Image (cartoon, rainbow, N blue to C red; front, side, top):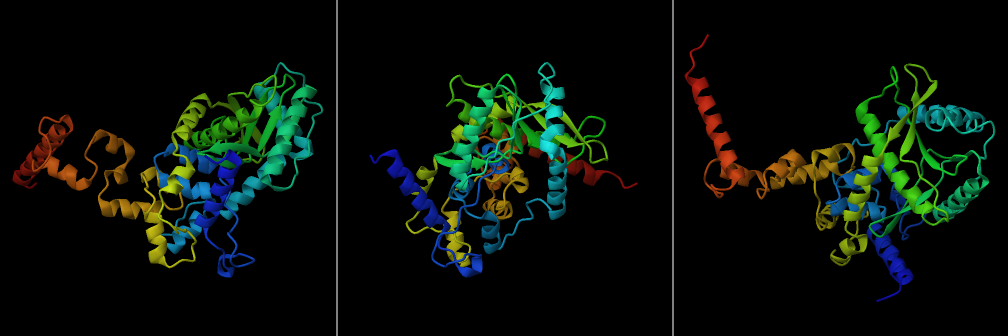
Length: 388
């Protein structure tokens, strides 16, 4: 077996081949070179962890394929993404929160999470610039160690953290990480959606919690390399605009449940090299390929579609069309798929309900036949009812 460094180099080369050679029409400066991989952010990782059975997304994200361009080339463009207005508004709010060396942000952390500590009248704000993602991740780890040893307040603005995902490194960039005087680390997530009367949209808060859980896992990987191991707090600070103003307010969010679920789901992901090894030779996902060839490449990787994908994956429309064409019950939702047991297609479900297939002793089949019988009786009674 080749050493890990050799295997890692071979895997990177294979993933580069999957992205395919660039061309001027795809925005590359020089034809023939593989395009730079798309970064795998925390939002994408949280979505990937929510659907660990989808080998297609795991491979495409691990290889850094531009799924948005791929969806356009397949004829199924997605509207997934953030609007330019929301992006600009979020950046403006974040800049306000971090103004004056992050004084307001540190005040919120002190008030909401660590009121017993000394007030953050001064704080260390280290320079995290470095060459390349590996360099930035190493610089972040060094800054965290130095800030922890200094035993004072420190604010790391957009640190870069590395997390191993299915055998491939993912580089993650939280909005901020605060180091407390006692050496503990806290993730800060800054969002532009408002907190009205002290509470925000539960769905948006849940999405922010899942995203923050990925950051906490990456921070724990950094902390594990230090001695003594610093405490990575399971409560993150969510900072949002207050009511209908642009003034920041904050609320602690306990992400222990999301962290446990995300860790378990990421551990279930099939390693990228195992998925890549099963591909036909010459498989490539370059958007510039003919549609027939590109479709064959995408279809060579199994996918697990669910309606939740529409809010989290650029290829959701393409996979939904394929799932519906195959009659897969997962297109109706994971909960329904779990209820139907071994019945995986709509045709199998209908056949079981109509009594032409399935074991009548199977509880699922019996329930379907009973439901079909009740439906038939209800429709018969409706047809025989007098008109009013």
